[in-house]
Image 1: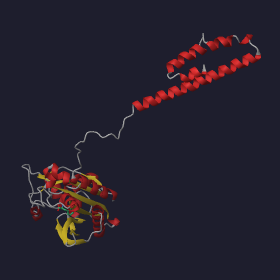
Image 2 (image 1 turned 30 degrees about the horizontal axis):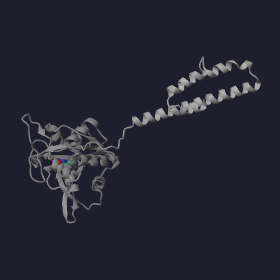
Image 3 (image 1 turned 135 degrees about the vertical axis):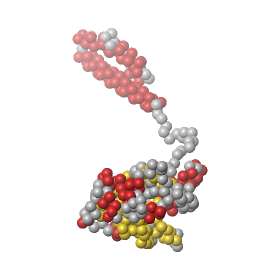
Image 4 (image 1 turned 60 degrees about the horizontal axis):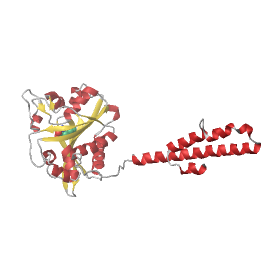
Length: 317
Ligand code: PHE
């Protein structure tokens, strides 16, 4: 009987043999019924055989169930390492990549990202930025105006106004988005991107020009992943006072203008309902495309917007 059990290779047969042995009319059942007529020695022998058979059935059952499980697992196994048909994978656009890098640097410095409308009203793009309609600084930027007096945002500074109006102060934010001006050559596109930071807090926090310069240095050095030689020039923007422009030494010999910045003009704060006797801060702005071009050694800004897949694939991103 033990040999018979050993040879069985499926659960159905095992079940059948078990029933034939221990079932109502089973052979062992019949023998157990005769126990009363047996001698002590015979009884002990039947008991031992009974126990041994039950153990053998149990072992075989476990063995067969395990085998069935293994078979199921291997037949349902999916080889995730198997190569599929080669596919055309999309890639992240270089400007998107640049924004996510700059964005995470600024976020690590405590700035929160804001966006705003590309079609702006006069107030947010100019007037609130201390550039009323008679202001000569409006000529600094050749703007695309709409018939209704709105304008294609010429600078992401407009987002900073919206942020101060909606969020109030203290505020530490950066605005990012597309901006539009009438200019077009290899380094200027009529549509380009800007990233502008703003930090305004209580006067007793002593936010100064040196905090501004340190912030810009930190951001640029982390982005370009090296130490940079920086030069600060006095400049003019209607919405900052004093205003500066920052250049970096590029390729050992050339100074390149990289950012405009300054302490937020008291009129701008006032226009956003903030008391300049209580609050002060700084603002800075970068060309989004510009820094991407520098980092990746590209020389034609228009390529970013051509949508030429061959160029995008080979642009090194
Ligand atoms: N908005 C300015 C520009 O477009 C840049 C700037 C931003 C300057 C913030 C100072 C402060 O040129």
